[in-house]
Length: 571
Image 1 (cartoon, rainbow, N blue to C red):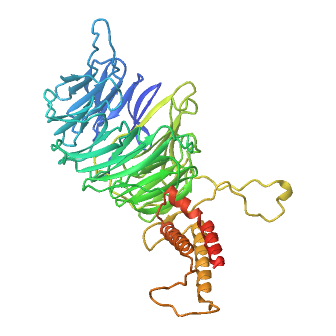
Image 2: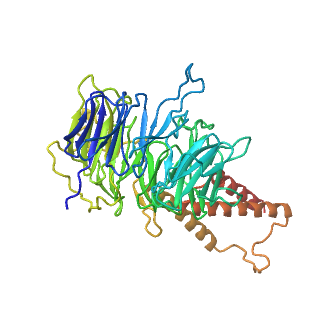
Image 3: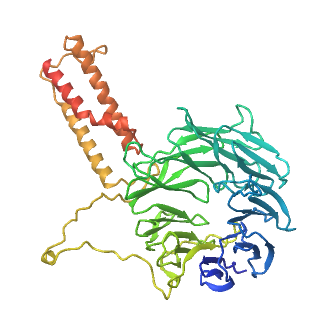
């Protein structure tokens, strides 16, 4: 049986179209421009809001299934099993209703009747979160999480009350259901994230994991697919040290087994993106001042593979998890690196300049990149390409028109099996988007001379395997290793040189004293500090990230050696 062909929803000022991807043949269209569009989780239904009404159509043939008279609707979403349609409109007050109207509405897709109207003033976290079997639904109300069971919204089945709770994330999958809750710190107390397993929500021992931290104005919480762990990106808007315009970010790990950790990153700077692998056993982090680093970590928060440095600020795993794309969009040039995750081998280096959107097709073979408004109001359009770098379809929006959104039709897990990674560029009439290697400009007067090493603004770090026993050291690491080996060799030579007046050494006194207790004490302290510095160097060599005070301690090595030498001369 041939695999299905995913649809591509294209929304713009000229209307909304459903296309058969990746060749983009017309499937169905909606002439009027739509405020918002969305697919159901299994991709069988498609919802759109035209400004007059909300329509739900079948993705297979485009036939209308339900219509709701909701002209003010701005956002809509389907429940996981397509039982409920959720619509939201901006909260407003009027003379007739000074309290305002309930602006969050839940509709039965089977009967078309209104199930419940609720108040949701803020657009943040507007949509309730369901478990995949729809047995549990959660929404945040002031300082409480309200839990509903079996889509019965007339009675609250359970509550979790915490002071200043501002974010939550419900675990994916079925039962037992878990929820991650974030509480903002106040009056010198740290912020914290706690994990609970429903329905055990009360009591001091109810939390299955807890992680507290400072420097957190807001957080972004991500569960892995198996619901065994959650990653928390904590950020503050202002970096008080003045080192970063983007504020300051830290990454924390919480497991449902109670394990917690701070993910140690080997380069200072912002955290641009954090993404879980679909296998739930690894995650990729893009971080550090430009050129940014990208590293894959395992569940122990140990680095597995370092992709080196490059112009990147985003990472995207394919739905099957066999390919990883590292990209630099926004204020970067749109360069992408496509990697085979199993072999950690680069497949291609396509380029999509001015792209504001990137999305994997559910088949794990194709990708769409788009330039959308209002992020960029010129050169709007989209491209569909194979991951090997060849462009299969290109559409540029006509002058005066805008492209707002491009969306792939989702499919249930397992609809598209994983295919072997292809390293040969796929055939295409539009050619490839592979960036051609360029050489540095050389003035005509110097072109007859042999090329010399160019001066680089930043020292580039190559990719390296970080697994134990398989480390490929970078140039800077090799340089530091040689320095350490030379120092050790010099120390061994100085030790092997015979002393002018060797005396018997006893077990009780391995080194001769100076006779001055104060001097001996100073020398002992200096040697203790130097030994601690040597241990820090060994930790740095093994890949461990050192703290700021530890690095400052290492910088004092020369000063300590000089003081020790002066004391030895006085003897």
